[in-house]
Length: 359
Image (cartoon, rainbow, N blue to C red; front, side):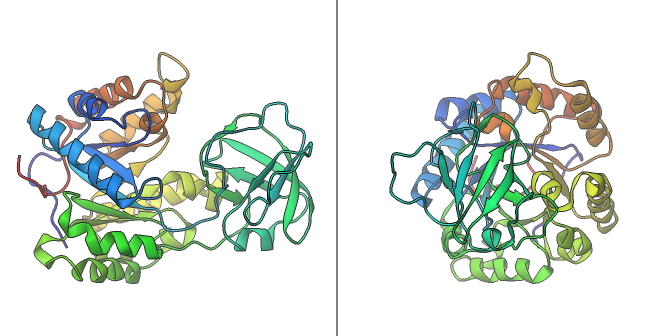
């Protein structure tokens, strides 16, 4: 296991890379505003683009003389909508959802979208609520066929690119490591990424597989840290073992809410934080920490209060996602969270792991 960097125990501020900050100039602005880590998702971009963005982050960190972690998020596999562009639900009465790629476009009145993965279609029944992303939108299933279902939108937003899909109240299967994830792990030794984030971890064996995959191309003393994302009931139940095998744990609140439902969400999240604290393993809290700043000038009061509470509780990292991927005020949001960390956490933001590039 890799030890976190020495120094005052203040939180790392992780900014997820997306269109809102996905340029060398915006990386520089994000780091200057207080981001101490940049997270890049391997689900969105090919390996050559990931390498280019890593180089851009390193260049910005050196220019500003501010050390910055680089986190490569391995997405695993879950059911997702197949749209490559925004899919608007505004004014839509019905949607046909295919359990496979959408057939060749026909002149029909009902909008169509596809779902990846075979498992979700097998459990969908009339009356089910199909949730998109982290709960931003939802559709109620009206009828089902062998290869598709018909659903009525319950919300009328824009489905973002390839958002995850979940059936409310039903357990579905996840894959922690896909072939593309393993390919990325085998080549990560030649990159400046200081840590890999592994999705849907539900046992310590998954972390062992990650380390073995990295060992094929990277000496043990040069391997990036491994961050286990706990985001299902099964993962929460195994947190102690997972924490013992990992360099850090990321509480993935978005998928945890989808998996466990509203009433158990708080208790399960609290259990992860307590277990990691007792084990002495760094813990990161992620997603939707302050999304309200994308629709208003000031943050939502409950977001502001809970985020400050997390910082006072000495969490080791806070991860912004929507706020910096497609949010409308990414730099202002980063700057505010960084100021909160300094006020309630006792010091400025900091990287969590030894850097894999020279400053």
